[in-house]
Every structure is written in C-alpha cells, then in structure tokens.
Image 1 (cartoon, rainbow, N blue to C red):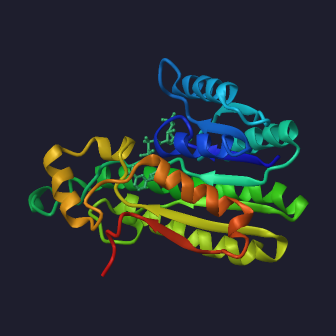
Image 2: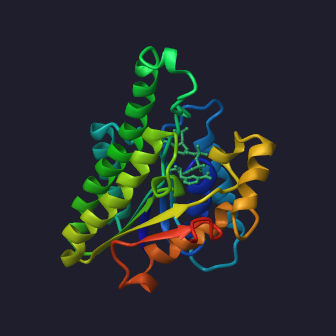
Length: 264
Ligand SMILES: NC(=O)c1ccc[n+]([C@@H]2O[C@H](COP(=O)([O-])OP(=O)(O)OC[C@H]3O[C@@H](n4cnc5c(N)ncnc54)[C@H](OP(=O)(O)O)[C@@H]3O)[C@@H](O)[C@H]2O)c1
C-alpha cells in the first residue's frame, strides 16, 4: 500500500483528491489549517472513514488528519515527520492547499492608486506565501523522505490563472510559479525516481468559484468549449493518474483540466 499526503484536504478539490486516493488504496494524511468551527477537517475525516468502512474492497486505508499551515516550515517538518513515522514512507504528495485573496488591480480608480498599494501588496504577499512558498516547503520536506526510498510522486495544483492573464496578480503569479517549480523540482529529482507534475484546473464547481455571481458564471461558461464548469472528481481522477505508476514516464508536465477553455 502506498502512502500519500494531501494539503488543503478538508474541502473542495482537496477533499475529492483525498477520497479518490483513499478509495483506490492509498493511505491518506489530510492537511489543512483547520481554522473553521466546527472542524471541517474532522468532519471530512469522519465522512471518509465511513465511506471506507462501507466499501467492498479488501483493503482498508488509514486516514489521519493534521492541523498545519503549509507556510510554516517548522510545523510542516514536524507533521511530515509524524506521518513518515506512522506510515513508514511518503510516496505521494499533492500540493493542493491554496488561497485567493480576491485582490484585483483596479485601474478605474487612478486617484487611489498609491493609497491602494499596501492593500494590494498584502494580498500578493499572502498568495505567494501560501500557494508558492508553502508548496515549496512541502515539496522540499516530502522529497527528503522520498529520496530515502528513491521513489515518489508530487502533484501540484496550479490553475488556469497561472497561464492566462488575470487581474489577481498575486494569485496568478503564485500559480504560474507552481508550474515552474514543477519543472525545476522534476529536473532535480528525476534521477532519484521522483516525478513531479502539475494539474491546472479551469473553473471547477466548488470553493473558489462559489463566490462568483450567477451572471459571471454564465459569462465564463460561454467561453468554455464544454459549456460547463468541471466537477471536483474530474480533477481528482487526473491527480490520481499522475500520482500512480500509470504515469511512470510523465515528468515535469502540466495537464490542463478546463473543458478546453485555453484552446486556441
Ligand atoms: N475551485 C476552482 O475553480 C479552482 C480552479 C483552479 C485552481 N484551483 C486550485 O485548487 C486548489 C483547491 O481549490 P478549492 O476551490 O478546493 O479551494 P477551497 O475550497 O478554498 O479549499 C482550500 C483548501 O486549502 C486549505 N488551506 C488554505 N490555506 C492553507 C494553509 N496555509 N495551510 C494549509 N491548508 C490551507 C483550506 O483549509 P483551511 O481553510 O482549513 O486552511 C482548504 O482545505 C487551490 O490551490 C486552488 O488555487 C481551484
């Protein structure tokens, strides 16, 4: 049985990835900041355990959860070490945790341009700190354990916004940075049996898109060749493929899961 860590596993895409991996035989360690009351992480863990109990397969994966801010290197080190001790190896890491501060360049308000710098910069800093720096910390620490076994697979969750232009500059830059990190880690670790790949979802029915107005959703759907938003399971299945040995010769790639949105 292989062992996996999924960051941002308490809801949305991360929750679907966790279920997909657990129900295909991986032990799963769920990570989130867990700053919701009642605890989303605990609820997700309980739901998952129930699903595992009710499935008919002969394997029963272990599910454990940790409260951990991925931008805190000391906490990530501590938590990953506990997971390694519990599972005996770390075979798969999915860097899914992410935030969108919803700061947007507002060029309509030129008189307030300088005044708005601090607000924009704080959003930019948060997004780079969690999405990009946090993924770096998790990849670096997980790779330390993967290198011991000369085996592993890391999957980063970027975004269509890391490819197309966006007014959410920190979010876009952090997600573009994740695609670059994917390639550079892949190049450094490839000789040691560790693959690093990326998935760039488009508009997915969950968390980050739920805040869009119905009008905006309709507008976006018109631009998507598949004429709909994706479901979390449609991202999770691609992650499962990339994590597995079925993708053994895919390394440093970024797969778009966006219903054809970026097609030229
Ligand atoms: N939804 C979309 O349409 C879409 C499209 C493209 C890309 N993506 C990417 O897919 C990923 C998941 O998106 P989603 O819509 O499922 O997001 P979501 O519903 O907002 O969930 C985000 C998850 O990340 C966790 N998280 C946030 N900051 C964290 C931190 N510092 N440390 C640890 N965990 C943290 C959250 O848990 P806590 O709140 O407990 O910390 C939560 O579990 C993100 O990276 C996002 O950028 C989403």
